[in-house]
Amino acid sequence: MPLTISIIQMDIAFGEPQKNFLMAEQQISEACSRERIDIIVLPELWTTGYDLTRLDEIADNDAENTIAFLKRMAVSYNVHLVGGSVANKNKDGIFNTLIIVNNKGELVHSYNKLHLFQLMDEHLYLQGGSEEGLFSLANHQFAGMICYDIRFPEWIRAHTTKGAEAIFVVAEWPLPRLAHWKSLLIARAIENQCYVIACNRAGSDPNNIFAGHSMIIDPWGEIIVEANEDTSIIYGTIDMNKVKEVRKTIPIFADRKPEFYS
Image 1: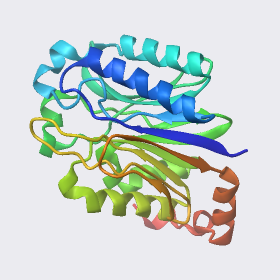
Image 2 (image 1 turned 30 degrees about the horizontal axis):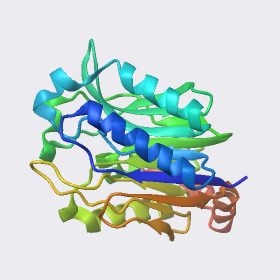
Image 3 (image 1 turned 135 degrees about the vertical axis):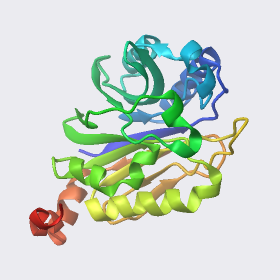
Image 4 (image 1 turned 30 degrees about the vertical axis):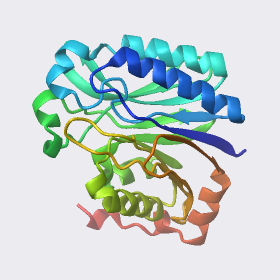
C-alpha cells in the first residue's frame, strides 16, 4: 500500500524552543489540512537550532517535552511522525536525537546521531550515539539518519542490508554545500535501491544560511518531489513494491561480496 509523506521544511528560531514548538504545531496542522498524510517529517535540531553554546540550558531533558508533543500531534492527526531530531540532555550528556512516534502516540524508536560534524562544532557540545537507526513503521522497515551521516555510505548500507526499504534523513545542511546534499542523497538511493526521504531546514542562523531543498527520491535515483530554499511543506507518495522491483531488476544485494570489503 502506498504511503503519502509530508516534509515540513521549516525555519527554526535560534535557541527558542517554545517558539519552535508553536511553529511546528502550526505547520503539522497545515500539512494535515491539505490531504491525507501517513508520515510527517521534521528537520534536525528543530527545537533549538544550532545554538550549541546554550544547549546545557535549552536542551530537552530526556527529550520529554518533545516526545510528549509528538505523541499529542500523532494522535490528534492520526499520523506517524519522523519527528526530526532534538538536543536531548540526559545523565550521559547532550545528544542529537531522532525521535519516531507512530499514529497511536507510541514511541517507536530514538536514534542518537553517530557522526558528529566538527565543522559546526558538534563534537564540542554533543555526545555521539552508538545505536542503529532501524525502525518499523506502517508495516515497513525504515532507517533514520541525521545530516552528516549521509557522508558515510557504509553506515547507510549497514541498515539496508538489514531490510531498510527507505531512509529518512533529517538535516540542517548549509547552502554552500547544496550540490553535495543533492548528489549524496541521490547516490544513497541508487546504491541502496531504496527511497530516500530527506528533510532539511530553511532560513538562517547567526552563523549559517541553510539549503532547504528537502526531497523524496525513488529507488532509481529519480527525484519525486523537491522543495526550493524557502520554508515550505512538500508531499510525495512512496510504494515499497518499487523497492522490490528495482532490487529484483539489478540484484546488487545478492551480488555483494562482503568478505572482500573489510
